[in-house]
Image 1: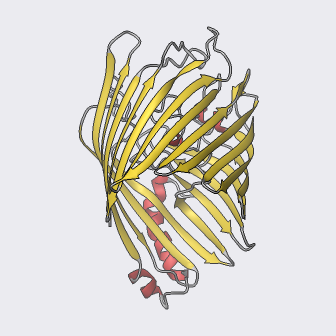
Image 2: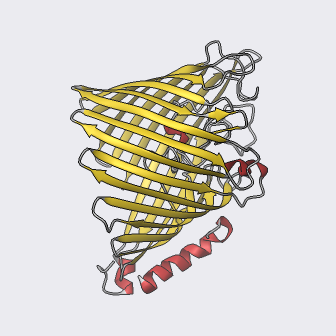
Image 3: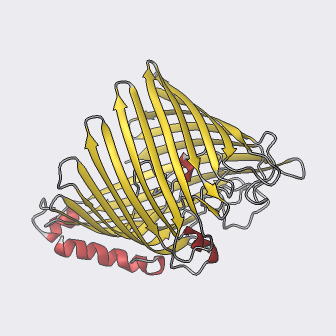
Length: 417
């Protein structure tokens, strides 16, 4: 599989290979290259963080960053095509800990500066199937188990072989073998890559009332970094996504057990129940998500887009595992709507641990979030705010998680060409 050290040369070889063998639209290799499409994406973001500290006072951080993305996809030739995408993240102002700059006295805003190949793969389409080999974006369902962390300026991508098939009507089959995870921390970070030998299977069948999905995610790390061995897990689950008139709902259950060289020996469960109802001009939402724990370990989702879950302040990332040793139960309410071309959303989360901590406490605090967005032509703007209140919470996660009042603000401007 492609690794970062050799990816620059692999990009050139990949495009040449795609052109040399490469959907049926192009009549020659030259046409496949010359008739391709190039795109430019710019995303400018200001992020501000203010959080309490145990010793009193507060800790702050802010950053003004720009993500510049350029990509190119060849035209198809005999089923083959090539795709390459470069990202650059620049920081123009502010003081924050971007995870690699050493400014640990500032609040964390995990958008490190740097340039890298975000995607570079060869694809082949035929027999109602598509196969991809190389560095690529990979997401399944709602991103709870496999996601691209697209919120952060440096996206998470995968060096992988993937296959998708839709030969049977209403049935979609997906398989992926992951050799490396290119994490959001970038090439300069010691945890910027996770070498893996992981297999993902995801199958969904669409019925008139909704879609049922079954999956098996078998993760195994080949990396010598000790913390990554915690990712060695086997997860099996089923998801039902249904619609009944103005009511949409999701129900999901998964079971996970440790595997490979995981230092923990455990079995734990995951459950999701959520619904949204259109009551014009509003959409109301209610949900409950539970990530379980037992005395020997806890349910983790190390490949997820974690920003989408458990609120926006990222209080429970726990080094990317997405859960804490006591487990997390998240009850949330949302209300949203649109007026004058502006969409808005309010969200409230109430968190409790599944198991009490050493002090007999289960209160993990609460979060209130608000967002407004507007799009026009190739442009979009978003203003987002989140405030987490620790309440009377005491230390969790075996004493390693000290909850603290936190406020975050984001202003994002995007342009796509």
